[in-house]
Length: 359
Image (cartoon, rainbow, N blue to C red):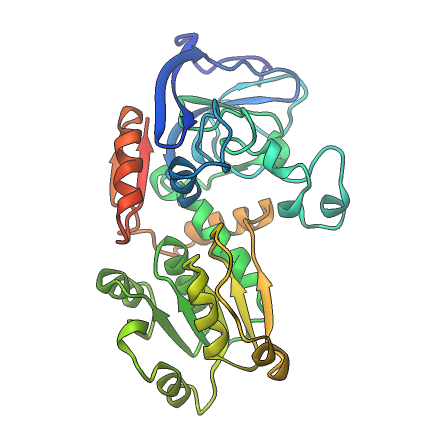
């Protein structure tokens, strides 16, 4: 394919949504990006609204003003700059995290690009002043590390869920899961439901989901949980879990709620020698945890953050093979001009809601 070609001769401008500060979004036209050497322009088809976008909209200190949010992106390659290999105009791609940095920092050299010291600054829709996919086009500056081709049999509207499934898959891989394990998933939102599916696929013996929302508990069962409980309605929750798990606690507890209080519940429900994987995120400090409980019972607490491009590719392969289901995980498709209203709605609900912008 000839470099610096455009898939069509469309407008030189595009519509974007700009983050101005807490609960403030403005809409404007901006010049459409052009692919320089080593770069690719992607026409955005779908962009998910992530929990990070919601937190940033409601709180200071997460996004810088003038950032165009949006990092859960799928689209079609429209323009390819000189020197780019492996992609063609018209390819359907997921625009993921930026991958290992050109400077090859310690974490990128050692195979953990999700911890890259330059990662936030290079991530579209999160880094200071970057232009994410609350826009009609995005510029991929690191295409070979940032773009993953979507299998032909995967719909774009399903592929846009790659971010939550990849995050869930990374959290799963952070654990020492073995087929036959008894596991607990705390929080049955989008990430929790994705973890449940991956655990079911991997041969978990018993999967117990914990969530106070009745509708989320129902979805947890539909996505593979064997039992779904409201922890607040179970005065003897620990005893009941032990009875279910042969007198022990869970082999692994995956905390997906991002609630400081539920980390303590996770520790309490884990068996001696077990693991607690912290996938959910929250800027608030953790609730008090009994350190003696962690030390005496040799519990392993592990954080989990984002994913790498290999995990993204694996998730898309899972979708292609029908191993994971996306039905019912997107509640609403909306237009870009509706994003401010959508962020307000999402900030006020505790129900399992996933909104996706369609272009």
